[in-house]
Length: 474
Image (cartoon, rainbow, N blue to C red; front, side, top):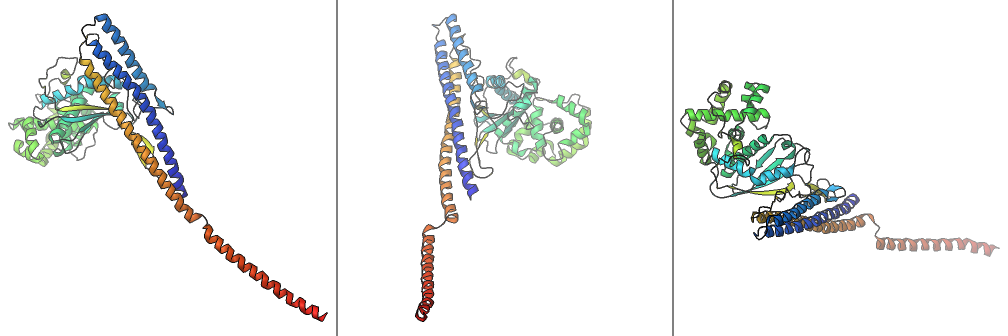
């Protein structure tokens, strides 16, 4: 019980330290807020055409100084030597997260979405816009994927796109773009509910089939052999290995070839899948069920891969042409996703708020920089009012992050009160068990004292009787 009491008292101190850390972060973010407000003010000023080029250039200099100070606050704010505005983990060496965030915010996600719209025209649900939360995994530990879209069977609930800095740091820009298209296919399948109906090989295979993945396929065949590649995705499960992705891609190409031979298309199959099971969609478009198709692929897949001449290997001729910096070929304009950037690491800082193991509270620390907030590339030299909304979004982001920190602090304050009450009651209970009941013991002491005095009196009287006899005889 004393161990619990001391543990609760230390947990209370831990919570107080957590509040101090949060207050440090919040104070720094208050200054970031002020800097963004000043940046917005300058953007409004620069939007006025009464300013000439020299004046706008002067305004730009102050904006650049503001961005430099935001970056300094984000990188230098520390608590007990821990950087607390850089997310929780360590960004992988060689990966410029600010630059990558700029790419995502200035068109990569929209470009990937448009590419999928063109590759699979009706795969997106037409019921409305769905939120996609973008978060980063930067805990210094590889998680086995560059990016991953997760969601639920509820097509109206937000999706989460998690990006691992460590894997992105070692990949080419072309492969990063291909990965974005791949994950956008998953997002689309979550959006229309088909992802939960699909076996793992098809979910991964169709995501590879839209941009094309012949390099991975050829590399896997050279490394593992064509028969092993064919069987890698047919054994059940989803191990997400190189061979599994290659096998899934090969199986989807084979399915597309069989659909075309049967007078159908991949798009018709996906349309059918929206309202029917995977087995039923295969039966409707190919005349066989899933088990029969998988058996067919395991039997004939190796021969198919050895004779790919004339086979469709992707649904897009050039997925990279959709991305900013090259000619835009997509005609899709009605985007179906609303991207929300969570500047926190996908990991979390743990505050131990209990007397026993795993009694933690997780705190997501924000990632602050001008690039992460989307204002790093602001240029007012040409005028225009578009930069104002950029600052509005940045201010909104910081406001939400500060609100989260405030919520954490409020929770910790209640935690401290709860820990104090629990500790006090345990101390009272422990005292009743361990400490002496003074009233009872005093009564017992008095009783024993009376008995002892009575005994002494009787003994004294007994001693006096022989002395009296001696005196009489004397």
